[in-house]
Image (tube, rainbow, N blue to C red; front, side, top):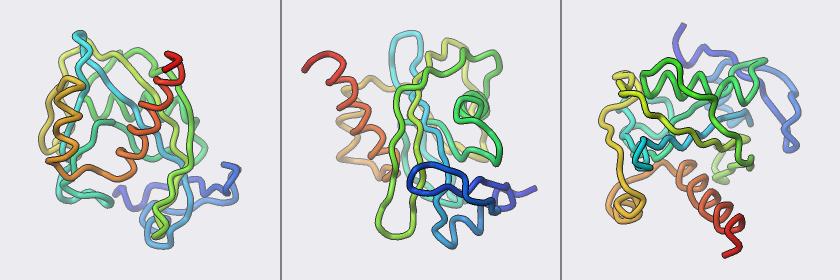
Length: 174
């Protein structure tokens, strides 16, 4: 089965399931669905950053500071987060990612999805899927901030990253 044929739950503005659709059709028709974003850090606290392959259905060849993807029909956010993190990092036995928050991503141009944001520590050697990841490295937070101005990043990942920084600032009382 191709990625475009994967069946997704279609959801409303309150994240309630209203139907199902193949992924390719959901993208083509701008149907709201569910996604997970997992910020993976190594033992030193550096962020896993990668460039997507050129054949991805959305945002090909762009950089991302999250691993993740769509939530399959009937799948929970938590299960999707673990599955996607292990798949994209190319590991097994990863700790269950920690749920942080959820937001509705909407670019105003037909791309909209409920986005659950997680974090996980990956102390295992990574071997990312070559069909998903064209390049990868673990970068310091400062390096990621510098690269934000230089590289073309996936817009939904940038939205999640900005919300995650605000979320963490709120926790620290800053």
